[in-house]
Length: 456
Image (cartoon, rainbow, N blue to C red; front, side):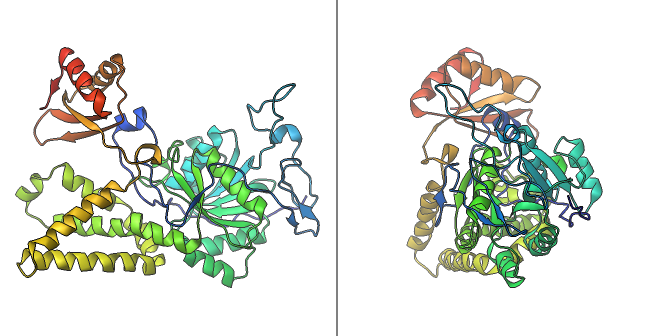
């Protein structure tokens, strides 16, 4: 068994894509709400494992990722995992039941212990996977380890898959170092730009057979390991961008990793992915920042009037500006196209407001906005559904939200979504409970009977 030097550096900060801030009540009551979808050119895999194929190994033999044998997981001697280790916990066996399916992902190295990397590690640990952690900042890896994300040491053996949780510009150099050290059977990344890193990986003539570009469509405004959550990816799309050179077993491991984290694997080309995220993530971040920048030097009385609307529009502007500078630069062509189209609409709106265009221009813009908003995926990524809203005034003190949800549950009404709005200087919050239209009257009457103030 050969020995390796230290694993190459990762990134201290995880990379967000679309950030999603929800209330604590939402996160606890319904994880995975408002899942982001990047559907342009996408084909959902639905968690199904891709067909596994043989590929040449570094030693000249073959490595198998088949369900029959399990993947090779040692350096030099091609030693295979024992069958009992490869069986996923809970698999059925015996007469009348299906045989256990050997797992493709049993050991993972996460390079970069920021928000996304640590969240991946936490999710995998919860699924019973052995996880090792590396970071250019050792203290970040140690903090992630202290949170239960894995061991902040170099793995003694080659792992099944290496997750590169670093900004897009860092992916090629990290991949080059790790592949030269033969650290893993498969490599994937989680950066939000795919075409530019892939072009450099190809230019460096790195091993494309073992690499699968990846991007989980999830994130938060908070950065670093302290913001990580094991449930961050539940119900979210996890995009993979395999190339014709990608080995089938590499794609199978990558999609299994996403499924273990609770995500839905999706395949796209790198170009289709970058165009999609430019539209649904990157350009919206620029727009949010532009609007938030108007507030930076605004008069205090004006800012004091701000409510939920401007908060929603500017929420993602809180993201790490250093990381977002790298993301936007790496995906500049696709983002530029979206912003140019937005600029044309903005110019038309300005002309209409100045009286240089007819009122129908503004009407058209607003109507298209309603139509576009209506196309966003609904609950669990399904067809958008129109819910009825029951607005409830809730005192801002401990236990009130729990009491509200308990009273709603007592009448058998499912809360489909929830939002909370606070007004300055008022010790109440307006909680909007979204329910099926036919249940709104029942819920409203029950809550009034329980003493709640329902807004008309």
